[in-house]
Image (cartoon, rainbow, N blue to C red):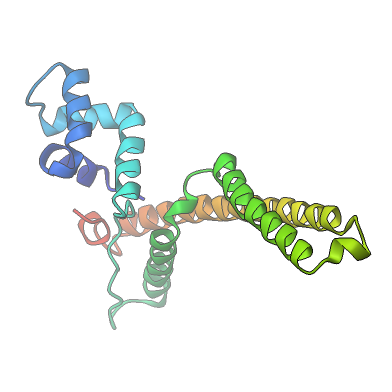
Length: 197
């Protein structure tokens, strides 16, 4: 839920986005591109939006450019419901931005391995210290299999959860865009009221 005008202004004027500005300058072959030229490039090539969002994610900045809408006493029930829904969705979108990107299985796999290997090591040492292997010589191997099965089960649960959260996030983002567009068209609020600048 970005405001394309804010993206352009940030790229052009905010030093945090100088890396993107350098890419824009190189692409446009212009050391001082105008806001209109940047806007056209950003609208035609989603690479720059992706880079912008990635920089924000790494810098722990939000790419959800929606203001909280003020619900006025004079607003009709339709306007109040729309504003409250947009506000609720904007909060959800801001808090769950990590779900905008699809899951990276390698990250979850790495975490699973980082949990499984030390667990196997600890269990192995406990079994040896407590002399459990004397009573059941396969106890170490059984514990290894149990840890591996638990790790695979955990990996599957985490990846499934991320997939579900990603789908919900993308649907909420799409729904919110439609609500904002509808509210602007019906003149319940202006573009400037709803989007950050």
